[in-house]
Amino acid sequence: MATAKSLTITPRLVMLAGVLLVAAILTVSAGFSYLTLRHAAELRLPFMQNVVLAVQQQEMKRTQEFVRDNVSAIATKVGQMQAQILHLDSLGERLSALAGIKPGEAPSPGNAGQGGPLVQPVLTAEQLGQEVDRLLAVVENKTDLLTAVESTLIEQRAVRNRLPTALPVDAEWNASAYGWRLDPFTGERAMHEGVDFVAEVGTPIVAAAAGVVAVAEVHPTYGKMIEIDHGNDYTTRYAHASKILVKPGQMVKRGQRLAEIGNTGRSTGPHLHFEVRYQGAAQNPARFLAPAGTTPTRIAKR
Image (cartoon, one colour):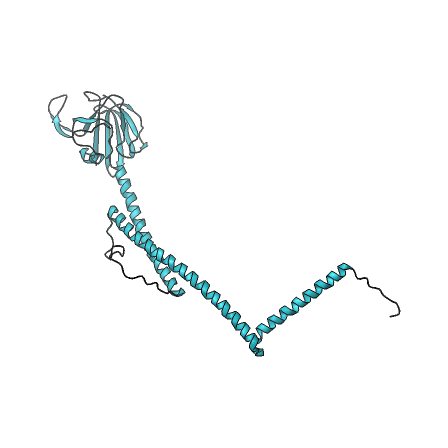
């Protein structure tokens, strides 16, 4: 203590001291508030107990309002899901009828009469959860049904695409129909195993259905001939062409150009001789071409 010491108070030092003082005050206040609120019940301070109770009630009220709002929103969504399920019921029945699938024996709620006054139920969160689980199970069952219907429709469409129901040429069909006739060369009664489309040389010949080219060759009787395998034991033949545009093994689509009208082979003039065979036996093409809007006597030019 013999020597004197000096301390210079600078603005920076004053500012630092002020900051430390404020921090100390805030720390003490926070600690006091925490300890007071935490141990208010133990200290049995009525005022602090009321403050804590008021804070708890306010928080509980906000929580209840939040839960109630969310429950109402979920209930609205559940109602929308129920309406969509009814729509799926109706749609599923229509698709099942188109696909030839018999619907279940239980009546669909979409077809039953409904009505009555509107009474909004008060659902708990647990009840809403159970309803959502039930709706999810219903949606899963409807999804399985619609998936089966879709598969059936796709299969039926594939089968239809393989059946020779499209017109092989845009021409008149009045030269010779399927069945017994007088042979144009011998004049004797003979079986005509196809139908003849009269057209000019070069008129496009198209595939009556999708399939694979099995034969594309020159035949002594059929002339330049194409045979297409459509699967399921069905084949079609296109004879007397002037030009062949496909090769054996080639896949063709319905309506794809195969050849051009000609007068090759055993023929009296330009035309297409068209046959449909099942397991090798000739069938009446009129049975297959009827869906295309044709008649056994004439195919009008379009």
